[in-house]
Length: 355
Image (cartoon, rainbow, N blue to C red; front, side):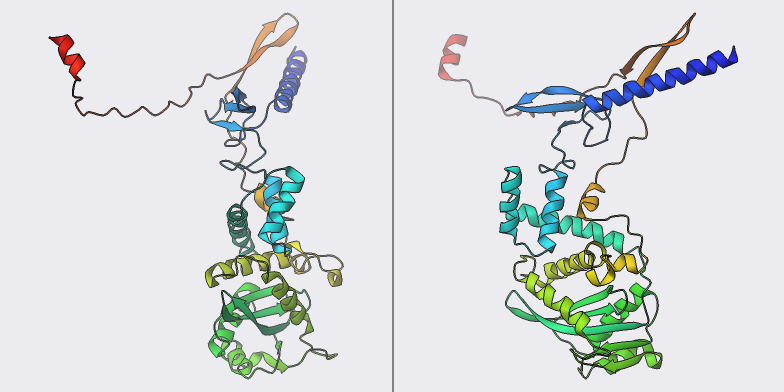
Protein backbone atom coordinates (compact mmCIF):
# COMPACT_ATOMS: atom_id res chain seq x y z
CA UNK A 1 0.00 0.00 0.00
CA UNK A 2 2.81 2.34 0.84
CA UNK A 3 4.44 1.60 -2.52
CA UNK A 4 1.23 2.56 -4.34
CA UNK A 5 1.01 5.81 -2.39
CA UNK A 6 4.60 6.67 -3.23
CA UNK A 7 4.04 5.88 -6.90
CA UNK A 8 0.90 7.99 -6.90
CA UNK A 9 2.73 10.92 -5.34
CA UNK A 10 5.49 10.58 -7.94
CA UNK A 11 3.00 10.57 -10.78
CA UNK A 12 1.26 13.61 -9.32
CA UNK A 13 4.51 15.55 -9.07
CA UNK A 14 5.43 14.62 -12.63
CA UNK A 15 2.03 15.71 -13.91
CA UNK A 16 2.22 19.00 -12.01
CA UNK A 17 5.66 19.67 -13.48
CA UNK A 18 4.45 18.93 -17.02
CA UNK A 19 1.42 21.20 -16.69
CA UNK A 20 3.49 23.99 -15.14
CA UNK A 21 6.07 23.73 -17.92
CA UNK A 22 3.34 23.85 -20.57
CA UNK A 23 1.95 26.99 -18.93
CA UNK A 24 5.39 28.60 -19.02
CA UNK A 25 5.76 27.85 -22.71
CA UNK A 26 2.43 29.39 -23.68
CA UNK A 27 2.54 32.48 -21.47
CA UNK A 28 5.26 35.14 -21.20
CA UNK A 29 7.08 35.84 -17.98
CA UNK A 30 6.23 38.89 -15.91
CA UNK A 31 8.88 41.59 -16.29
CA UNK A 32 8.57 42.66 -12.65
CA UNK A 33 8.37 39.44 -10.61
CA UNK A 34 9.32 36.78 -13.22
CA UNK A 35 6.08 34.88 -12.60
CA UNK A 36 4.28 32.90 -15.31
CA UNK A 37 0.87 33.59 -13.77
CA UNK A 38 -0.14 36.11 -16.42
CA UNK A 39 -3.32 36.71 -18.42
CA UNK A 40 -4.08 38.78 -21.49
CA UNK A 41 -5.13 42.33 -20.72
CA UNK A 42 -6.35 43.60 -24.08
CA UNK A 43 -4.65 45.22 -27.04
CA UNK A 44 -3.77 48.84 -27.59
CA UNK A 45 -2.75 50.00 -31.06
CA UNK A 46 -2.13 46.42 -32.06
CA UNK A 47 0.14 45.66 -29.06
CA UNK A 48 -0.81 42.82 -26.71
CA UNK A 49 -0.81 43.80 -23.02
CA UNK A 50 -0.51 41.34 -20.15
CA UNK A 51 -1.49 41.39 -16.49
CA UNK A 52 0.40 39.50 -13.81
CA UNK A 53 -1.73 37.72 -11.22
CA UNK A 54 1.18 37.43 -8.85
CA UNK A 55 2.11 41.11 -8.50
CA UNK A 56 -0.86 42.81 -10.18
CA UNK A 57 1.28 44.78 -12.66
CA UNK A 58 0.59 45.20 -16.35
CA UNK A 59 3.33 44.92 -18.95
CA UNK A 60 4.17 44.41 -22.62
CA UNK A 61 6.17 41.33 -23.62
CA UNK A 62 8.94 43.22 -25.47
CA UNK A 63 11.85 41.22 -23.97
CA UNK A 64 13.00 44.32 -22.10
CA UNK A 65 13.87 45.14 -18.51
CA UNK A 66 11.14 46.61 -16.29
CA UNK A 67 10.18 50.14 -17.30
CA UNK A 68 12.33 49.98 -20.42
CA UNK A 69 11.14 50.13 -24.01
CA UNK A 70 14.00 48.46 -25.87
CA UNK A 71 14.93 44.79 -25.65
CA UNK A 72 17.87 43.43 -23.66
CA UNK A 73 19.63 42.33 -26.85
CA UNK A 74 19.42 45.83 -28.35
CA UNK A 75 20.85 47.44 -25.22
CA UNK A 76 23.73 44.96 -24.90
CA UNK A 77 24.60 45.35 -28.57
CA UNK A 78 24.64 49.15 -28.23
CA UNK A 79 26.97 49.11 -25.21
CA UNK A 80 29.32 46.69 -26.95
CA UNK A 81 29.47 48.79 -30.12
CA UNK A 82 30.12 51.90 -28.05
CA UNK A 83 33.24 50.48 -26.42
CA UNK A 84 34.51 49.02 -29.69
CA UNK A 85 34.68 52.54 -31.12
CA UNK A 86 31.33 53.16 -32.86
CA UNK A 87 29.78 56.60 -32.56
CA UNK A 88 26.32 57.11 -31.12
CA UNK A 89 24.94 57.90 -34.56
CA UNK A 90 26.45 54.72 -36.00
CA UNK A 91 24.87 52.69 -33.21
CA UNK A 92 21.47 54.28 -33.88
CA UNK A 93 21.67 53.38 -37.57
CA UNK A 94 22.81 49.85 -36.74
CA UNK A 95 19.79 49.26 -34.49
CA UNK A 96 17.47 50.81 -37.09
CA UNK A 97 18.89 48.57 -39.83
CA UNK A 98 18.55 45.34 -37.86
CA UNK A 99 15.49 45.96 -35.68
CA UNK A 100 13.57 48.77 -37.42
CA UNK A 101 13.62 51.01 -34.34
CA UNK A 102 15.54 54.23 -33.83
CA UNK A 103 16.57 55.20 -30.28
CA UNK A 104 17.94 58.67 -29.56
CA UNK A 105 21.56 59.51 -28.79
CA UNK A 106 20.73 60.34 -25.19
CA UNK A 107 18.93 57.00 -24.76
CA UNK A 108 21.95 55.02 -25.96
CA UNK A 109 24.30 57.05 -23.78
CA UNK A 110 22.07 56.43 -20.74
CA UNK A 111 22.37 52.68 -21.42
CA UNK A 112 26.14 52.95 -21.54
CA UNK A 113 26.43 54.86 -18.25
CA UNK A 114 23.91 52.69 -16.40
CA UNK A 115 25.41 49.30 -17.25
CA UNK A 116 28.98 50.56 -17.04
CA UNK A 117 28.33 51.31 -13.37
CA UNK A 118 26.96 47.78 -12.87
CA UNK A 119 30.10 46.26 -14.40
CA UNK A 120 32.40 48.51 -12.35
CA UNK A 121 30.69 47.54 -9.09
CA UNK A 122 31.14 43.86 -9.87
CA UNK A 123 34.78 44.25 -10.99
CA UNK A 124 35.70 45.90 -7.68
CA UNK A 125 34.99 42.61 -5.91
CA UNK A 126 37.76 40.71 -7.72
CA UNK A 127 41.53 40.82 -7.14
CA UNK A 128 43.79 39.79 -10.05
CA UNK A 129 46.87 37.59 -9.65
CA UNK A 130 49.49 39.70 -11.38
CA UNK A 131 53.25 39.42 -11.85
CA UNK A 132 55.99 41.40 -10.14
CA UNK A 133 56.63 43.63 -13.17
CA UNK A 134 54.36 46.56 -14.02
CA UNK A 135 54.51 49.10 -16.83
CA UNK A 136 53.39 52.74 -16.48
CA UNK A 137 53.05 55.46 -19.08
CA UNK A 138 51.12 58.65 -19.80
CA UNK A 139 49.51 60.27 -22.83
CA UNK A 140 47.53 63.43 -23.54
CA UNK A 141 43.82 63.55 -24.41
CA UNK A 142 41.69 66.41 -25.71
CA UNK A 143 38.48 66.55 -23.64
CA UNK A 144 36.07 69.39 -24.28
CA UNK A 145 38.88 71.56 -25.66
CA UNK A 146 41.08 70.94 -22.60
CA UNK A 147 44.33 69.00 -22.56
CA UNK A 148 44.29 66.33 -19.86
CA UNK A 149 46.82 63.65 -18.98
CA UNK A 150 45.83 59.99 -19.03
CA UNK A 151 48.20 57.91 -16.86
CA UNK A 152 47.96 54.09 -16.92
CA UNK A 153 49.68 51.18 -15.24
CA UNK A 154 49.46 47.64 -16.62
CA UNK A 155 50.78 44.22 -15.59
CA UNK A 156 53.53 42.85 -17.81
CA UNK A 157 52.52 39.17 -17.93
CA UNK A 158 48.74 39.17 -17.81
CA UNK A 159 48.20 42.49 -19.69
CA UNK A 160 45.77 43.37 -16.89
CA UNK A 161 45.14 47.12 -16.67
CA UNK A 162 45.48 47.81 -12.96
CA UNK A 163 44.63 51.50 -12.78
CA UNK A 164 44.05 54.58 -14.90
CA UNK A 165 44.20 58.20 -13.81
CA UNK A 166 42.88 61.31 -15.58
CA UNK A 167 44.32 64.62 -14.35
CA UNK A 168 45.27 68.09 -15.51
CA UNK A 169 48.94 67.53 -14.63
CA UNK A 170 51.40 64.62 -14.48
CA UNK A 171 53.31 65.61 -11.37
CA UNK A 172 54.55 63.45 -8.54
CA UNK A 173 51.23 63.51 -6.70
CA UNK A 174 49.34 62.39 -9.81
CA UNK A 175 51.74 59.51 -10.45
CA UNK A 176 51.72 58.51 -6.77
CA UNK A 177 47.91 58.45 -6.74
CA UNK A 178 47.97 56.08 -9.71
CA UNK A 179 50.49 53.83 -7.94
CA UNK A 180 48.30 53.65 -4.83
CA UNK A 181 45.26 52.69 -6.91
CA UNK A 182 47.23 49.93 -8.61
CA UNK A 183 48.54 48.68 -5.25
CA UNK A 184 45.03 48.50 -3.79
CA UNK A 185 43.76 46.66 -6.85
CA UNK A 186 46.58 44.10 -6.98
CA UNK A 187 46.87 43.69 -3.21
CA UNK A 188 50.66 43.71 -3.38
CA UNK A 189 53.65 45.82 -4.39
CA UNK A 190 55.66 45.03 -7.55
CA UNK A 191 59.37 44.29 -7.57
CA UNK A 192 59.98 46.59 -10.52
CA UNK A 193 58.12 49.20 -12.56
CA UNK A 194 59.04 50.06 -16.15
CA UNK A 195 58.35 53.62 -17.31
CA UNK A 196 59.57 56.16 -19.84
CA UNK A 197 62.11 58.82 -18.96
CA UNK A 198 59.71 61.22 -17.20
CA UNK A 199 61.62 62.59 -14.22
CA UNK A 200 58.90 62.31 -11.54
CA UNK A 201 58.50 58.53 -11.72
CA UNK A 202 61.40 57.62 -9.37
CA UNK A 203 60.16 59.94 -6.61
CA UNK A 204 56.55 58.77 -6.94
CA UNK A 205 57.53 55.09 -6.86
CA UNK A 206 59.76 55.63 -3.83
CA UNK A 207 56.97 57.59 -2.10
CA UNK A 208 54.45 54.74 -2.46
CA UNK A 209 56.52 51.54 -2.46
CA UNK A 210 59.83 52.56 -0.93
CA UNK A 211 63.14 51.00 -1.90
CA UNK A 212 61.67 47.49 -2.30
CA UNK A 213 60.40 48.39 -5.79
CA UNK A 214 62.99 49.02 -8.50
CA UNK A 215 62.39 51.67 -11.14
CA UNK A 216 63.51 50.92 -14.71
CA UNK A 217 63.55 53.73 -17.26
CA UNK A 218 62.96 52.44 -20.78
CA UNK A 219 61.83 53.51 -24.24
CA UNK A 220 59.57 52.03 -26.91
CA UNK A 221 60.93 49.73 -29.64
CA UNK A 222 63.65 48.12 -27.56
CA UNK A 223 64.01 44.38 -27.07
CA UNK A 224 64.20 44.34 -23.27
CA UNK A 225 61.98 46.22 -20.78
CA UNK A 226 60.03 48.04 -23.47
CA UNK A 227 56.95 50.20 -22.93
CA UNK A 228 55.43 49.09 -26.26
CA UNK A 229 52.72 47.15 -24.41
CA UNK A 230 51.10 50.18 -22.83
CA UNK A 231 51.85 52.41 -25.82
CA UNK A 232 49.68 50.13 -27.98
CA UNK A 233 46.90 50.23 -25.39
CA UNK A 234 46.91 54.02 -25.24
CA UNK A 235 47.01 54.28 -29.02
CA UNK A 236 43.89 52.17 -29.41
CA UNK A 237 42.18 54.12 -26.63
CA UNK A 238 42.92 57.48 -28.27
CA UNK A 239 41.46 56.25 -31.56
CA UNK A 240 38.20 55.40 -29.84
CA UNK A 241 37.91 58.62 -27.85
CA UNK A 242 37.45 60.56 -31.09
CA UNK A 243 33.89 59.26 -31.49
CA UNK A 244 32.88 58.94 -27.83
CA UNK A 245 30.40 61.50 -26.62
CA UNK A 246 31.40 60.86 -23.00
CA UNK A 247 34.70 62.63 -23.55
CA UNK A 248 33.21 66.12 -23.49
CA UNK A 249 33.49 66.65 -19.73
CA UNK A 250 36.12 65.29 -17.30
CA UNK A 251 33.46 63.81 -14.99
CA UNK A 252 31.80 61.71 -17.70
CA UNK A 253 35.20 60.91 -19.22
CA UNK A 254 36.33 59.23 -15.99
CA UNK A 255 33.26 57.00 -15.98
CA UNK A 256 33.76 55.98 -19.62
CA UNK A 257 37.46 55.35 -18.98
CA UNK A 258 36.53 53.01 -16.14
CA UNK A 259 34.08 51.32 -18.52
CA UNK A 260 36.84 50.93 -21.08
CA UNK A 261 38.96 49.34 -18.36
CA UNK A 262 36.18 46.78 -17.80
CA UNK A 263 35.90 46.08 -21.52
CA UNK A 264 39.67 45.75 -21.92
CA UNK A 265 40.21 43.50 -18.89
CA UNK A 266 37.12 41.29 -18.89
CA UNK A 267 35.46 41.20 -22.32
CA UNK A 268 38.13 41.71 -24.95
CA UNK A 269 40.22 38.60 -25.83
CA UNK A 270 43.88 39.16 -26.70
CA UNK A 271 45.62 37.21 -29.44
CA UNK A 272 48.90 37.35 -27.51
CA UNK A 273 47.12 35.67 -24.57
CA UNK A 274 45.80 32.77 -26.71
CA UNK A 275 42.46 34.52 -27.22
CA UNK A 276 41.90 34.91 -23.50
CA UNK A 277 41.06 38.08 -21.60
CA UNK A 278 43.54 39.60 -19.14
CA UNK A 279 41.12 38.78 -16.32
CA UNK A 280 41.10 35.09 -17.27
CA UNK A 281 44.90 34.98 -17.37
CA UNK A 282 44.96 36.77 -13.99
CA UNK A 283 42.80 34.00 -12.46
CA UNK A 284 39.61 36.04 -12.08
CA UNK A 285 36.33 34.13 -12.32
CA UNK A 286 34.13 36.95 -13.51
CA UNK A 287 30.43 35.98 -13.46
CA UNK A 288 29.73 37.82 -16.72
CA UNK A 289 31.19 36.92 -20.09
CA UNK A 290 30.00 39.93 -22.07
CA UNK A 291 27.79 43.02 -21.95
CA UNK A 292 24.70 40.89 -22.57
CA UNK A 293 25.27 39.09 -19.27
CA UNK A 294 25.66 42.46 -17.54
CA UNK A 295 22.31 43.68 -18.85
CA UNK A 296 20.56 40.40 -18.02
CA UNK A 297 21.84 40.61 -14.45
CA UNK A 298 19.44 43.51 -13.87
CA UNK A 299 16.38 41.35 -14.43
CA UNK A 300 14.33 40.72 -11.26
CA UNK A 301 15.06 37.42 -9.56
CA UNK A 302 12.72 34.45 -9.77
CA UNK A 303 9.74 34.63 -7.38
CA UNK A 304 10.31 32.83 -4.09
CA UNK A 305 6.58 32.32 -3.57
CA UNK A 306 3.84 31.52 -6.02
CA UNK A 307 0.09 31.94 -6.06
CA UNK A 308 -0.39 28.62 -7.81
CA UNK A 309 -2.87 26.21 -6.20
CA UNK A 310 -2.98 22.55 -7.22
CA UNK A 311 -5.97 20.53 -6.05
CA UNK A 312 -6.01 16.74 -5.72
CA UNK A 313 -8.75 14.14 -5.28
CA UNK A 314 -8.44 10.65 -3.86
CA UNK A 315 -10.04 7.98 -6.09
CA UNK A 316 -10.00 4.18 -6.05
CA UNK A 317 -7.30 4.32 -8.73
CA UNK A 318 -5.13 6.64 -6.69
CA UNK A 319 -4.64 10.38 -6.29
CA UNK A 320 -5.78 12.39 -9.32
CA UNK A 321 -5.18 16.06 -10.14
CA UNK A 322 -8.53 17.80 -10.33
CA UNK A 323 -7.25 21.22 -11.39
CA UNK A 324 -4.55 23.84 -11.34
CA UNK A 325 -5.62 27.40 -10.77
CA UNK A 326 -4.25 30.62 -9.37
CA UNK A 327 -5.17 32.48 -6.25
CA UNK A 328 -7.51 35.34 -6.72
CA UNK A 329 -5.85 38.69 -7.02
CA UNK A 330 -6.96 42.27 -6.92
CA UNK A 331 -6.07 44.76 -9.59
CA UNK A 332 -4.36 47.92 -8.57
CA UNK A 333 -6.90 50.63 -8.00
CA UNK A 334 -6.71 53.63 -10.25
CA UNK A 335 -5.93 56.88 -8.46
CA UNK A 336 -9.05 58.83 -7.62
CA UNK A 337 -9.56 62.09 -9.38
CA UNK A 338 -9.20 65.11 -7.19
CA UNK A 339 -12.43 67.09 -6.99
CA UNK A 340 -12.14 70.79 -6.70
CA UNK A 341 -13.89 72.32 -3.67
CA UNK A 342 -14.39 75.71 -5.29
CA UNK A 343 -17.99 76.86 -5.46
CA UNK A 344 -19.39 77.27 -8.98
CA UNK A 345 -21.35 80.40 -9.75
CA UNK A 346 -24.73 79.51 -11.32
CA UNK A 347 -25.36 80.85 -14.80
CA UNK A 348 -28.12 83.32 -15.70
CA UNK A 349 -30.28 80.60 -17.27
CA UNK A 350 -30.01 78.42 -14.17
CA UNK A 351 -31.04 81.37 -11.97
CA UNK A 352 -34.14 82.03 -14.08
CA UNK A 353 -35.24 78.42 -13.89
CA UNK A 354 -34.87 78.39 -10.12
CA UNK A 355 -37.19 81.38 -9.94
